[in-house]
Length: 454
Image 1 (cartoon, rainbow, N blue to C red):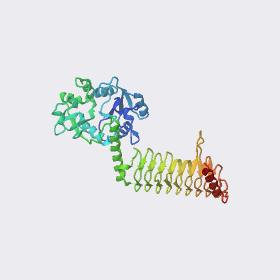
Image 2 (tube, rainbow, N blue to C red; image 1 turned 60 degrees about the vertical axis):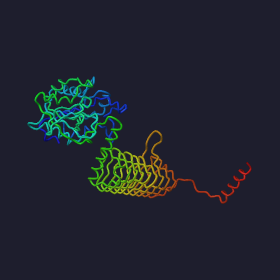
Image 3 (cartoon, rainbow, N blue to C red; image 1 turned 45 degrees about the vertical axis):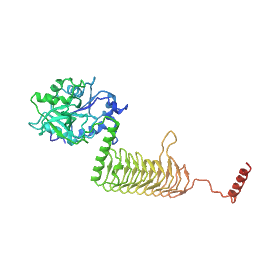
Image 4 (cartoon, rainbow, N blue to C red; image 1 turned 180 degrees about the vertical axis):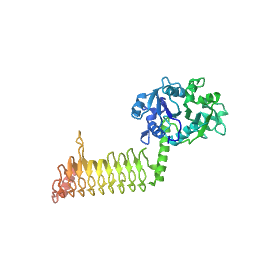
């Protein structure tokens, strides 16, 4: 997306706040949406613009952000003390004194911003004769504590006024500041150093750049965006709202690609969920990270999948749990109340009811009876079970790993298998059945007599 931009881009992400309203030991911007930290959503979208430099301004719990950003190429800049957003951006600008291009200023707690909107901001100031500042704003009937954007009808900005500093007339304005902007870097440092903190909060407001630009004969413009896209997350309630917006967007995208969601509002996805066309997803299904579903699969109600691959023609659930490392090949079936973990089911293999299959390889067209478990853990180590093609495992069997069941073998119901089973053999591991005629009637009579004497 960055190819059409004439100037290089530096991104400054503000993430120095304490996030006290989140009431958490985890840094605010590391709380997940769709299974991915908010900050990493923003980093992923930003990556499509190919910025020359990315600087993240940190303060509280900086060590958490450093760990999260390892390997991303982002540079951390410490803001200490924290004297406002203008002061925060100045720390980043001072860290790249030789940068010449456009600086994109973002917030780490605004995770739903799209690459297209970022590019709109950059293009506004990148074109010849364009303004020096482009600010992203949104309209709302409940502006509350948002800063108000004072601008002409053509988008030319006069100033941004914080709600606590606004007059009664200014508070009636419905065009609100998102805090996101693009600025020509050649002017940014000088304007930041000219900021003053004579306001209600005693802070250096980034928003005061607009007035400084006008005073120096430069122009700033406002671009309008979607309120949902620029939502900031400062509390658990707002985190839930952002999660809901993310999920709604993901559901719409998947349905547009040909996935059937019977009750879309009840299905939840991770940021990396992949589902092919003509797949049917029934209500109340949860997809954790790392799930790939091929075209034409069926995921039935109340199932939970994470770290799993499901091939075409497979059926999962209802009430199934696929844990990481599960692979279902074409036409395999995992039915109700079956749990799998690091289990590979070959084409057409079936585990229809009430089973646990862990650390297992199950051959094509094998049939796993109800109540079967692979005993893969001895309290210290994990062991593997291999079941050959076309094998039949009778109900309520325990396969004590490590163990191999040969192709075509049959394991009788109720067996506890501790040794390898040969190909095409029958294995029965249970005590012989013994019947004692009349014993039950005599037992009941004896017990009733004993009870009557009390």
